[in-house]
Structure formats: C-alpha cells, structure tokens
Image (tube, rainbow, N blue to C red):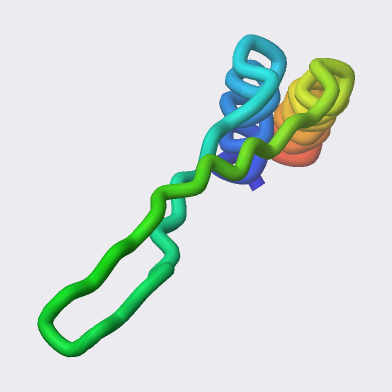
Length: 72
C-alpha cells in the first residue's frame, strides 16, 4: 500500500504541474510501392489540475492510513 500511496502522490503532483501531453502519431497518406508519404499528427490530451490535486490527496491519505495500520 505504501508503494500505491507514493505512486498516487507523485502522479498527482506531476499532473498538477503539467496539464496536458501531446501524443504524436504517424499516418500514411499515400503508399505507392516504394514511395510512401506519411503525415505526423499531434493529438493533445488535456486534464484539469484539480484531477492531479485529487490524486495527490488520495496518495497522502493512503500513506497516512497505511502508517496507522502498521503502528496498531
């Protein structure tokens, strides 16, 4: 559970700072034997910084609950 809490915390912090990523895909436009023409497309993925905050808080809660279970 400690690993899950740390992972959630780190992912949440990263998602709060960086609010989008760009995925670049390559698409074939023309394929004529040895001649190929391809096109690179950017596909952005956006999310709210609130999502990262929620994940960070969830990671902190998991870490706190894990510590309480170990000490009792």
